[in-house]
Length: 156
Image (cartoon, rainbow, N blue to C red; front, side, top):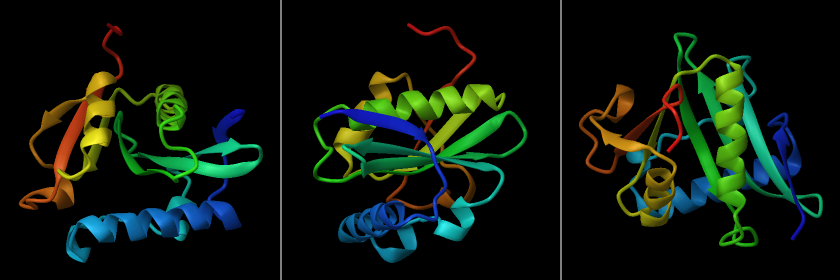
């Protein structure tokens, strides 16, 4: 599978398809009030970088970097469709997203995932993310696992 990963605009049919599929997946695992999704309009903001992975031109995965403007950012909406799973797509997206974060001057990258997403948690741990106390809207949500990585720390 030939894979191309790049920053793209979120208002595209196959990116919107990934957003819908990711939302359906999240809602199949967790209650609606524990699914902290961003809309395509929110993803189109200047503070957001959307990373899209394409196989043979078709979007198979995506994630968004939301820059808080204070040296920190949040990873949102990481999703890989069935066609891309198990093929290194999530790793390629994370590589591109962390590169984009560093280019924006982000030092601390945080994320929220759910306790049922064991493969995602394992991916994040392999990449140097550590579990932290819940932050922002996730405080008090039993379905939230928050993680963080210091992008300024040397890679191990």
